[in-house]
Image (tube, rainbow, N blue to C red):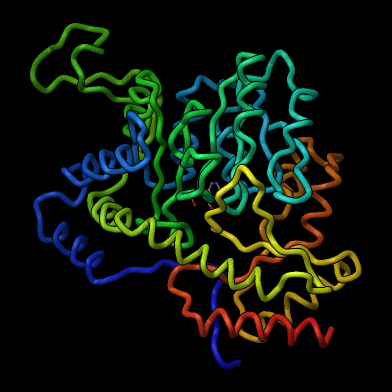
Length: 384
Ligand SMILES: Cc1ncc(COP(=O)(O)O)c(C=O)c1O
């Protein structure tokens, strides 16, 4: 094996390193000024009123499900083709994910199937912009409004993506949007996440939820302030705080988001050109309403190759391509089976899982890396 190219990785430069070192030399490693600075920068960048950062995308989702009022016994509509975090965060609260089948081309939740699954227990629709391709937000919003449901975006794949002219995170269609700053995502803080919202009520709850459900704001106090030290706990919250070290990295990374997305799109264009009309697999689509930010470059094997997925996957690995599969349908997981999803079979999600492989795509990839991937992919398929 000559070299290994992962499916995704971070790009850290000297400016990022200096930002982190500056915090390490400062008075605050956590709960200092950098968290608020990062939140302000995120809110400004996405033209949202509020941003609340968390120590992961998962904890941000948990906070948001709590803040929108999801409760034990409620149902929420979501997709099976996502990382388990999207539905797990609702399970933490005791709510029940209702998985809807996906669109064949985008692998996003199939809008036309949502309404059939709405019951009087449904409180929320939680969508994922799979791989960086936005869902059809306008039509999903119409359904949410018609049934008085909250609509939230798990935008963990979709920083820098646009739906029509609206950047994901801008909240023109939804109540809130979550981002993840895991190193394979568009920008990184090591681990980290954020919720963007225009809703002051959600904002207040999120701020409290990430720090034990505690408020120090005297206008919120239920009891009389007993002294300058006083604080109150109103909800059972968690320690989901981001550190100042992470926030400083986030501020520095955010400045580079546009160039990172640009490079991802350049790589996708090179792949698209090289792989168009190939006899082995289909390439990602970009619908007319979408500006794809290519967190993933997800190929789908043609029918005659799907029984050879393991063989192809192993051969690509052997050639040094750090390919991955996104995703095993969530309801396949033994834990979900044990919760009662064992008979669930969503045909499009199953078929997508049979065929999908994610090729390497990340801003630090050189043109040589991209050419290497292309030549190795063709080499592997020619031999199969
Ligand atoms: C769609 C989606 N949602 C949520 C998450 C969770 O984010 P984090 O890893 O930051 O907790 C991920 C992470 O992979 C994800 O891909």
